[in-house]
Image (spheres, rainbow over the protein chains, first blue to last red):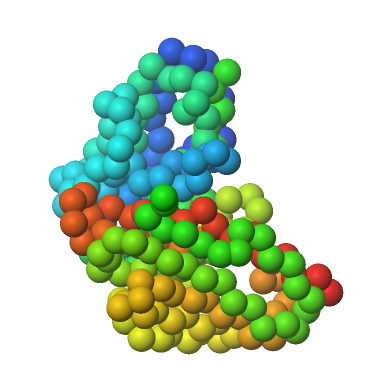
Length: 112
Length: 110
């Protein structure tokens, strides 16, 4: 069974640009959640999707958004990038909400 | 004060030693997760607990709901156990989001 796949693995963007990150969950998993990891703040919850609906949201500005498709694949978008958005973005999938999460390898975003 | 506190922040031990990492939380939770992160970023979910104790190989996780405390134990530690161990709790109120501890960096020397 394939694991959680995140693309791309590495990304360099310029301030002010926007970026879209992709997450393909494990087959059969319907819940996808996103996290940001920085050296200063550690791991922080961004949002969680289940059955194409955002169920939970962390304390991030509106520049951070996401969506989930009918096949459970999810995308995360960050608009008007800032230097502070440089981070490792992790996606995790679960069969349902509040069950064990399986993490992808992450996308390392660098904003210059 | 952070909602989730881990101790110690850094731990260095010799191969074979018994390791304990602690996690205390101050909020109501529905579950607690222990995660392992190796250099390079990949995260592996080790345990999800809502009560009692779980064991997987050399790893044991316990949780005391009344005391709002969990421990992760590693028996017969090995250099390949060197990683960052992260405790995360699922809140039962509000956004029901996962809140993470700051992590414990474990180094096992041969």
